[in-house]
Image (tube, rainbow, N blue to C red; front, side):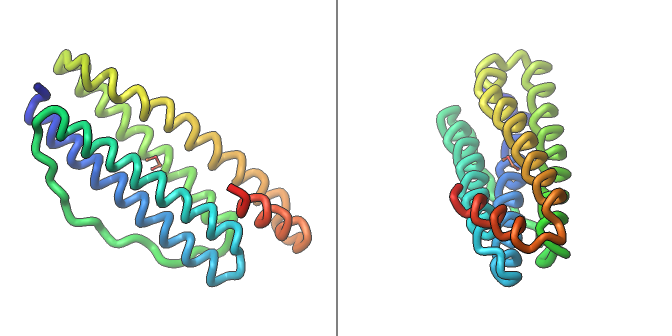
Length: 161
Ligand code: OFO
């Protein structure tokens, strides 16, 4: 059985994952409105991935007989200056999420909660991937900035996700 403080922390993380989903859906909509169909598609996929992250936590709490509390989701920004800023903010956000996951790991270690420690390893690995992907796309977006043909190709590439 997990501790009350761990249940509360995981409930907060469910909210953070859903906020991430909301953020990326907002980026998807903004990208679409700016004519970047591929970028929009990429963020729509990212939205789904964040919802999966949230649901994995929900299932975990359920499997532990713990209560899931769905907290209010804060508003997200609605507009970015362009693709570069979207991925700058994505990378920044993913770094923050990594620190949240690591805090959960600290708490699990402090509780000597081996089940949650084990469960969290998925998120530890996932965050390495999330940061690496955001960094890679950000670098590519910076490289092609101002070049319409290259930007078109990058948009096409992201649309293939
Ligand atoms: Fe759930 O990993 Fe991104 O935020």
